[in-house]
Structures are given as structure tokens and as C-alpha cells.
Length: 535
Ligand code: NAI
Ligand code: MG
Image (cartoon, rainbow, N blue to C red; front, side, top):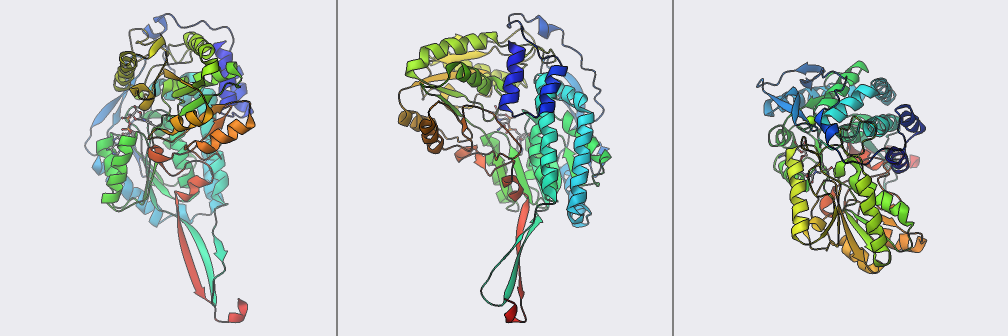
């Protein structure tokens, strides 16, 4: 069932276009896969056929070494072994990249080019990504550890979709005129903001790239993007495709490197006009402070979460179990919006636990290049240790460990799908973002109570509610303080749907029309009218 489940869940939950489902068929998503039990799959990792051709920084349209000549290793999370050594950018490289982006913004042609031409370059780029989809998916899986079929049939097609979406916006961004008292003609111009600094995480390297680069380019900005140190490879590959598509030099610059060096240099740069960040709440605060202490550049933040997934007594229980499982375990549990507090009504609690446990035990874990695998390794040893630490804390605080709870196999960063029941609100596993394959199931009695408990968190990124009663759905969706409420579904991420957080889950929204505001300045031009009769 695992193959069919992946296919169905991905198409249902990620609203995939038909090309995606046919890719799923082409690459043999099929029924009847065995449950995880053996570590053999991990001992001899499948060798991807893609070559790692781009490991230098991408500045002003060229692949260049770092100023210091230093490199850092990017690792294969299946084994912990080195895939490639990548140029390590630091302050001086960020300075070079910002100068290139500044020049490309101030002297053009990008911001001054016809919006239609910008749109055509973005569409050509999307076509090139489609042509190279298998290599890109392989590279994403190799560097990150996510299932290859997930990268190939879901994330890459959504990446392409996002660039189509933003290419469509490029020539539809315009200002307005407003009536004003007195003999004045008032135009409101929407201008690009300038040089955008973008810092992305490792859990969805290409998708986070698209969420940020797409709107910035559509609005006519230039960019310096810092990839996560764990996953630098695919952004460099797509940089080459952007160059082939005709993107002018300096419009997109990619600096690989670490957060406290390259990332901090970008966030505090005096010549960067805006910063967009996705990652931990802790680092988000640092980025906001660096921006404030330097040139007060506006900041958008997409941060952590502890999203509730509420299953009411009238829910379709099998579907709720399956989607709750997906909501938490998808992408090895490494999702900012993971449904990491599964609240279940007391009347269906025991049945739900039994089914959730059975589903977790069926989850296929192993080499993410294997077709039948639903779960690969965690990204690195730091995250692996962090997740195991939370599992220990769950056990120590007397939550009931239903299944899992340990490393899977003996190599790499694999963790058994883990389910805790009898989780209480004050336990650490119910409060902190675990970012791993650990489902925490809590019991509730009534709707008012569960809304109150669901909101009793410093986060407010996403949420889900399962019910067959429209009034319950409306009550819960209005009561939850979160940027997204999914009703009888989860992780639906169409390009036009805004995404972002309340409270400490962030500032601002990405995707959809709202993301454009992050990359635009508003200028009022007030012109005196000589002849008041024209008013
Ligand atoms: P992080 O927030 O430190 O890293 C995210 C990005 O920020 C990376 O590109 C990193 O190099 C950069 N960064 C780090 N320190 C910086 C600084 N001082 N200035 C500027 N940029 C900086 O997250 P990390 O350490 O990779 O993961 C820790 C936890 O963060 C995870 O366990 C998870 O809970 C959360 N996280 C949340 C993500 C999300 O999608 N909201 C994504 C990744 C991690
Ligand atoms: Mg890596």
C-alpha cells in the first residue's frame, strides 16, 4: 500500500498537476511494498547517476572560488559521507555578490526591462528545469535525503509551477491612481525594492528557493541568496539554468556558506534593501536584529511551528489517521508546518491510537533512492541527535511510546517512525518543534477546550481540523490563531495560497499575491494640475 499511499497523498495534499501523477506512474509508484524491518537498504546506498558539476559560488553570472579559497563538505545523510566540497562564502564574498546585485539593479537592465521580457526569461528557466528534472531530483535527494519520488514527482513539478505562476505576475504588477482633494493628480507606483537578501533552509532547498526567488524576480529585484550549509548543490545547478535562460549577470547571486558568517554578513549588509529568511525562530530573531542594527531593511520571516491537527469525533477516522500520519511524517518530519500535536476526541481516541500506530509501523524507511521508500534519513547528525533527545524526553516524561523510539539501522541518520500517546500539553514534546518523525497524540473532550489548548503555544504557523460538521469546521478555523487552517486535508500548497505565521512563527506571507508586497516599494507621485477644471 505504501506506494499507492505516497502517490495518493501527494496528489491529494499537494494539489499536483496531472503531469505529476503521470510522472508517478512512469516511475513506478506501486502497491504492495513491504514494511520497514531491515537496515540492509541503508548499508549499500544506491549511487545516483547525476554528476556534481557546480560547487563554486555564483556571482555576477560566473562560478567563482571563495575569496578565502576555503571550502566545506556537503554530506550524504544516508551515510554521513562527503558528496562534494563546496566553496565557502564569507563576508567578502557576500560583499562581492551584493556589489554585483547592486550594479545589476542600479544600471539594469533587469528592473527596467519590459516586464514581458522578464516573464519570458522566467518561463525559459522553468522549461530548462523541466528538461533537467531527473538530475535535479537526484541531486536534491542526494544532498537532503528526501525520497527521490517525492522530489521528482512532487517538489520539482511544484518548483516549475511556482516559476510559471510568478512569470505570470511579472507583467501584471502595477500601481493605481487615487483621487485627492485639490488640483492634484496622484499616481501610486509599485517599484522593485532593490537588492533582496534571501536566506533559505535545508528541508526544501529548491522549494524555498522558488518561494523567494520567484516573487523577487517577478517584481524586478536583484538577489543575493544564501543556501543552507547542509544543501548547497541544487541552487547552484539551477543558477546555471538561469544563465542559460538569459538572466542578465548579477541579477541572481548564490553564496554557499554558514549562517553566522555568510548569513549574518547578508542580513547586516548596508546595501541590501530587504531580507527574507526561513528557518528556526531563534535564528529569525538574530536576522531581525542584524537588519535593525544595520540599515533597518524590512524583514520577512518564516519560522518554526507546533501545528495542531484536530480530529473531531465525527471525522472520517481512516482518512484522519492517514492524513495525520502524512502531516507529521512527510519529509522525515522536517516541515515547519508539521502537524506535530495530534489532538483526538476522547470518543475515538483508542481506535485512532491503534490505527496511527499500525500506520507508522507500516512506514517504509530506508534508502530514499528506492521507489518504495517513504522515509529517508534526517538531514544531519545534529538534527538526528536533537530528535533522539526529544524522544528520550517523551519517554522520561511518561508519555506512552507506542512504536519506534530509536535509530533505524546503524548507518546514516535514520530514525524509526515514532508515535507517542498520552501526551500532555506541558511535556516538552508537546511544546517544542521536534522536526523529526515523532507523532505526539493528545486527547480532548470538547471544541472550546481544544481551540484553547491548540492556541496555547508561542507558534501560529499552520493547523488542521478533521470533522464532517461544517459548523465545527467554521468554529475551529475562526478560533485558531494560525496562518493556515486545513480542513479535512493538510499540506496543500498551491502557488496562489499565502503561507506564513502568526506569533513567533514569523512575519509576513509568502506565495500568492501577498508575497509580491515583500518585494515592492510604494511611491506616491503627486502632480499639480494647472487647470482645476480637469479634476
Ligand atoms: P537555522 O535557522 O539556524 O538555519 C536556517 C538558515 O539560516 C541556514 O541557511 C543557516 O545557515 C542560516 N543561519 C544560521 N545562523 C544564521 C545567522 N546568525 N545569521 C544569518 N543566517 C543564519 O536552523 P538549523 O540550525 O538548520 O535548524 C535548527 C532548527 O530550526 C530545526 O531543528 C528546526 O526546528 C528549525 N528549522 C525550521 C525550518 C523551517 O522551515 N521553518 C527549516 C530549518 C530548520
Ligand atoms: Mg547535504
